[in-house]
Length: 585
Image (cartoon, rainbow, N blue to C red; front, side, top):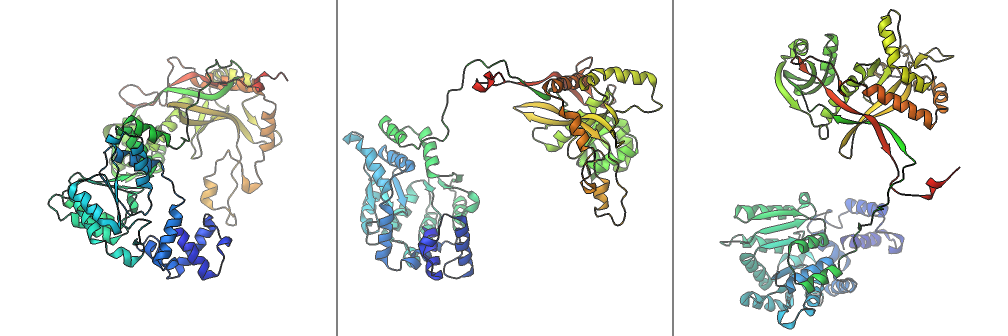
């Protein structure tokens, strides 16, 4: 109603036709809101008096307001929530309903519910409005329930409350009924904003009684953070008066009503009536295909399931707060092999205890037992495990781990002059299957450019369907030298210094080895990819006891990161049949 009133005032003040605007269009909504923010035609958006002021500004005469209400109500029908409320009244489970609405939907729903019950079981509601408050007084005095009391009047009444002056003073008899009901019963407030000062004053008066709202006070709202100050103050005073107060968040009246039907026993005819009016569900059960899945085609995933990972790391306490990069740099300067995550004045660490404590003596480092790791909930724990996983996979084989913010990787170590011949032969034997799968050298120089390249993997750690997986993507890394930075260099010094040495150089005209890399992989089809994935999987998981360790520590010297990685990669196949799978060409 407020949105419609604002649109009419906007058109009147700007000399526009209502046909020229669309109140459902966000652009027009923003224009109308901007207009009222710059003018003083109405109270600010959300002000308790906004509704009354807007209604009176559009329809100054009471008879015109009654006609507007009557026209609007003629289009309405009881919703699912109305049918549930009407059935609760017919079943004797709701004694009294107070409403600020003018429509007859509640009583229509109650009458429809009573119509399907035997006459002796029917509980037809008494409807009382401003011009028939004596009915409400009689129901209250004689406990003749159920009753529907319309605090702002009925749409057929000659007296209905809409404007500010009308809403300031509640009818004395209807106010008395509301106050006395609050002294006798608990109350549930559903969808009421608390805009009306007269009603809020009457409710506040209940709190002066010896035992206000004896069965509790429940205020239902779409968002507890959007309660009006008058409502929050009322609830606070009710709590101080000893009332059992609860604020319940509920999206819509229909959703609340659906929940009520699950916990309330309605007579079977009423329950069937309610269910017949239930909105069609958006999600409906479907019969899943039960036929056996086809054996082919099959998709091989470049991922390995992690069957076991560290559940705890060493806790080291510090005398001052620090960050992970600071600690890592200090450990690197001291030549200490460790993996660390800083948590203020604590560290979660994998490595040799004594070496770590000596390196961090300036921070007053002391052992503090162990710290549990929950990578599914804590990002720092996932990052720590991600780091040690990469280190553990590369430790036993000729791989070099590379740790980057954008994602970790491993590359094959290139032979160097002066290497131990026995170690070189051992490494070559270890990489023989991989070299056979690639059918070319795994390290070398890019023809025509002379840039060193190394085959390797981009690694990821992911939780999928409750299982941890190590995903790997084969990639050819090319070492592109960093450019010399001068005063006239348009890139900032820190950005150049932190660039990945293997990455492309967009500031230097793109990736000079991009075409060569694409050509290197262009002729590798499914069979070659399967061989490469299988060779990498075997290389990463080929251990004597089925586990990989980040540091290979002796027992008692510290906490090592131990992983158990399943050697078979993930596979996927279709769970249904499709004609596409039957093609022969």
